[in-house]
Length: 317
Image (cartoon, rainbow, N blue to C red; front, top):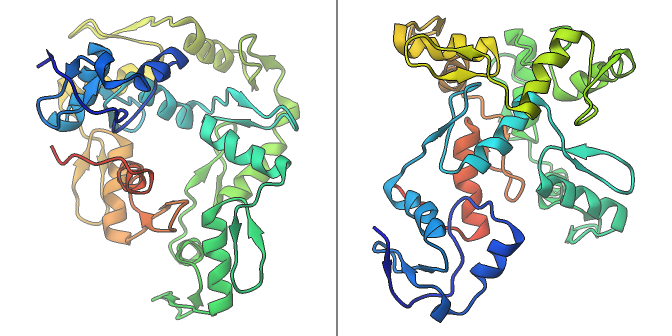
């Protein structure tokens, strides 16, 4: 419900994605914010901002990632998330040319060039660009090796190191090269491998300069820029840019759940759902908070936790 009222000068809570003009609007005096939320009395300068805010209270997440099944409140947030699947990195460093999928990651990276290291170790005085790097460093002073492998008894300072070690026992190689489908134990091994492909991609995208080994992969990628959706569902007439996206969607109509958990037999329609579920058996928590070092099984859970550091309230609605 949208109605007029005076109120707070606080900004939007929750996920944000506004233009510069929108940002100016959020900083306007309370008298210029006539749209009031019935739930928490926050006021907004535009009705569209109020509608976005209200999704926090009603729990509405209408935007769905076709790749992994994650839901989002805003379309812009979904678009940011989709870059983790497409590999698109539109934010480039003016100093060294390194590219990033998120603007926040670029800002953190730029601190390296600027020499900004605001996080200082009280033990030895060493300084770090990120608080997560300081947190890991401090554990080396304490010498605590509380993370123990139940398979062989080896102990580690960081849980991330333990999880990486456990893959030696399970044989799991979660990092796959999108070009040749070779799998790797660690993300660093994958990055090293991918460097070998960079000079082997003759087909370049004219919009973002991303390279591909095959012409068909370039043509498929270009639909991201053109918005073309040639693959149509005969059941509901919804259209998709990629054929495999249509295939996943059709399971909504057929009820097919081809991804089965080897531990408990539970089946899932999307591979991403199975991956999240499987972590409940392995206790793997690969997603780490950069602020406090806490680990989580799912990226969505990490994002909710991260709001505690930024001061945004999380609705349980």
